[in-house]
Image: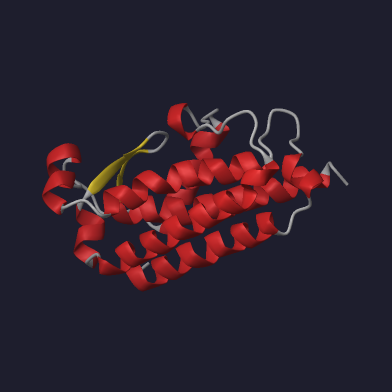
Length: 177
């Protein structure tokens, strides 16, 4: 997938989940199925996931190569990356550390969080479009569950991650109604 299509996918997937969360009732926002996050926690998790990718995409390339190295293989396809993520989840992989949302998030924080995610995604889309196709396949970043990913793969993951959590919110609300 070329960077223009990738930027569009990022924008589309995040716009969808932002609209989805914005349109939930207070009851739906706070509802969490057993051992799952509620919609506000999922929103917080997405912010915590997008922020470091956004920051890394703005770093000079020499910093990326010095800190993380360069790719020693071609980038995987979008579908291959998503399949790999599902395998890791099925093996028990979960968010950890800095990516875990707080136990409680106030309803009053909803709009601030939505605007923050929207702002981060807009910045990430702009940074994605400024990258060369070569850079997307050359430089790598660490992912806590998937290991070393090329920038392109990290953007694939970031785009998919929004739809994954959007589906999680939908599935969770089925048990509420």
